[in-house]
Length: 248
Ligand SMILES: O=P(O)(O)OC[C@H]1O[C@H](O[C@H]2O[C@H](CO)[C@@H](O)[C@H](O)[C@H]2O)[C@H](O)[C@@H](O)[C@@H]1O
Image (cartoon, rainbow, N blue to C red; front, side, top):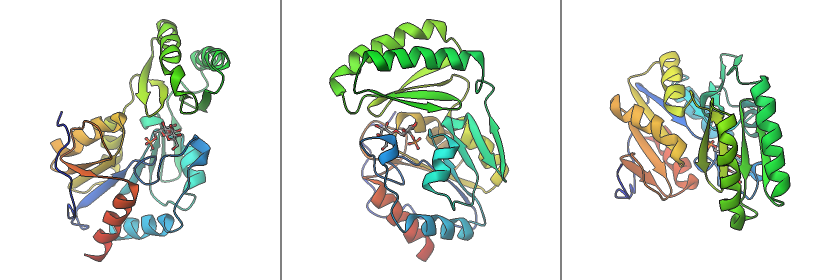
């Protein structure tokens, strides 16, 4: 892991003829908000993504922790493929797939466990996804420790799941999915010689590792340790970088 690489003021540059671009959503394309539903999509983002998709001949994908239906709500016109739930869900060429954990007995048990934990910690928020769930504590940061302990104690009963520390939240997802695998699968589908990934969270690191090992590059958004060789301070600077690629 590399800590705090030098900030990138301009670039890196991109060859639109050969690159494939994979974008995280929260904290990368849009600013974080107090609640998952509170995210605000900049007016010009849909057109920017459409233009980039066209310029890349379609080699543009979203790779998010969000459920696909959320991504489609926030970006209804996004034309490219999507991986949601950190890769547990996909939308490729209009076809949808979900990890077998979705709709399983284990899923119902997980949800029941989490509903109890959230009810025991007023102010916390449960975000349900088809393939997992998130317990948010952004409104009650002082409850992080007790919520974390309660979640750790139920993980014995949920052996197929992984507990992940997200931003002001704990996330449960199937342990056999991650954004590295999700990005690899989408890359095989899209083609292109130079894979590029941008993300802001620890869950983005496997995808950053993947693209850097395959001749591409990764950009970390915001603070924090990262394996990425490049860094941008915020989603606004990421959107500016995407715009600059279209005009260079
Ligand atoms: O992979 P991403 O697209 O970055 O999604 C990661 C998680 O993002 C969302 O949670 C985060 O953003 C919320 C809205 O800004 C914020 O309130 C929360 O504190 C953050 O953790 C989303 O709700 C999760 O489902 C995603 O996994």
